[in-house]
Length: 279
Ligand SMILES: [Zn+2]
Ligand SMILES: [Zn+2]
Image (cartoon, rainbow, N blue to C red; front, top):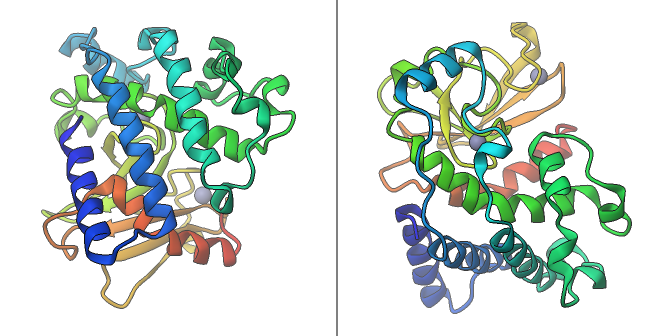
């Protein structure tokens, strides 16, 4: 288990003991983390296969570090985890709706083929056979939760290389490790620079504040943000592509911020953003 996952689980357990029961979304997340952590314990963490020169060259060329084949996924483990993760989602129909029965049957693990994962990884369309009776966002979420331990493990192998000065050469809207989209950002403590956080592998990278990471626009009249009363959170929005980005200001947020947990704790911001017409 990673340090962060361990800290989050500890925090959730404390909250559970204090309040008797966790809010449903956090209870779901607790189960998800436990299953993901157990999967991580079943496999050796991947080692970096690129040396520091190769990393530098790739980033300068705008090429992510992990291509699909470079991930070297252990298929048996991926498929086993897929069926476990589907089970966790299936246990919360009030959050996600009913999961199709075929995803809960023995053997359902084989539905997640290498072709499907490759399509997901590359942002291509998922095979229609997999999608026939489930919404695409829900299926995407299940695949993402399945691949998270693998991608995050890969990202950790490169963590020490990805220092701020090296990331200065990247500054793109997608993740330098896995090519995923950001789903969160933070303003760092020192100078308040904005870092994006990958929705798939939790890698953080520098990105200019005055540009939309989703459509790349720099038109200042299209970009703005809302903040809460304590000014800890900001919701950056773009009028051009109508996307939003939740951002936490670490200069104001106190010491113990666990970013993956913040995704869930800020669910209310997602609701507000959608209500305002952003996605
Ligand atoms: Zn990533
Ligand atoms: Zn935009």
